[in-house]
Amino acid sequence: MSGVTGVQVRVGCCGWPVARARYFLTFPLVEVQESFYNLPRLSTVERWRAAAPAGFEFVLKAPKLITHEPTSPTYRRLRAPLSEAQKRRYGAFKATREVQAAWRETLALARALHARVVVFQCPASFTPTPGHIRNLTGFFERAERGGLAFAWEPRGEWPDA
Image (tube, rainbow, N blue to C red):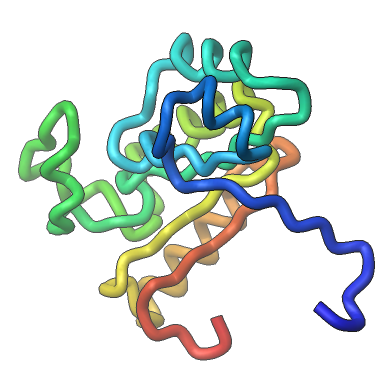
């Protein structure tokens, strides 16, 4: 990192590869993987925050309900399956009440964790089509940030991403 000043790098894992108590002794940060598949209960993340040492950082992964189309295999792990009508209103950063509700719930969890960053991981199928670009930019323009930084992780081919 020659020539880079003022950069702080923190290393952690995506998910908990070992018991939390042991993890807290090893790493200063975790990317909460559970929130991608099924948003955890507020009481659960409050327990995580309370158990974490001072200075420990939680990075929250946005749920697939925001980022992935319901045709994604990841939806098989959804606690409450969606009806066909519901499926049309989720994923791909759509400007729907359902996606906005998923974001509001995510924001509440991020606040409870004192998170500073939320990661939006997109599938490779989320390519730079006009519709995807419109949805993505619209979502980020409308979303209440509450002081959070948004990290976007494209997995498909995006020029200059």
